[in-house]
Every structure is written in structure tokens, then in C-alpha cells.
Amino acid sequence: MLRYTVLRLLIFFGCLVFFWLVGLRNDQILLLLVSAAASVLLSFFLLRSQRDRFSEQIQDRMEKRHEAKRLAQGSVDPDSDEAAEDAELDQRPDR
Image (cartoon, rainbow, N blue to C red; front, side, top):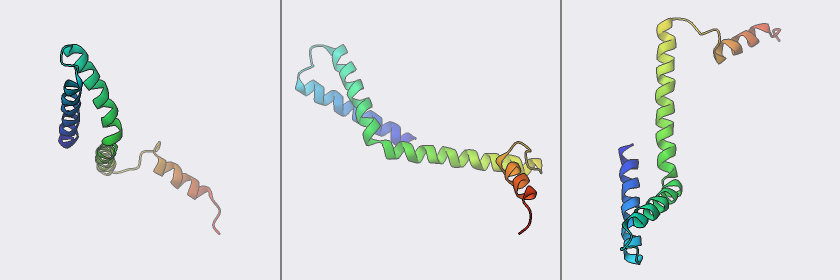
């Protein structure tokens, strides 16, 4: 997450310098707004892999937490997908 934040800031400051050199020096508010908008668009496309990795980490962490909670309870939640799959398998005739 820290890496993503630093990269977002670098993109913003890069846009800020670029638009300052292009000629938006006189209107500071316009310079900030244009730089912010451009950095959001660039970050959306350039940092997609960073966001995907971060969301995978969050998903893994949540799955581990859910599994630990389930094991701590000592039983399978009757509303869970596992319980539904087990019930479906129990209803099938043996082949």
C-alpha cells in the first residue's frame, strides 16, 4: 500500500511539473486541478497491477481470517457454501 501511495504522489508531482513547464504557472488553482485530474487518469491505467496485487492481499487476508474463525467455532456455518455443497452431495444417490 505504501508503494502504491508513493507512486501516486510521484505521478501527481510529475504532472504538476509538466503542466507548470507547459505554461500553467500563472493560475495555481488551475495547475493543481489539471495535475490532479491527469494524475488520476494516469494512475488508473499505470498502477493497475499494483491495485490488483493489493486487492489480492486483502482477499487472502480475509479468507484466512474467515477460515480461522470457522475453525475456532468448531463447526461449519449452516449458511455457508461448504454446508450447501455437502448437503447437495449427501442428497445424490451413490454411483
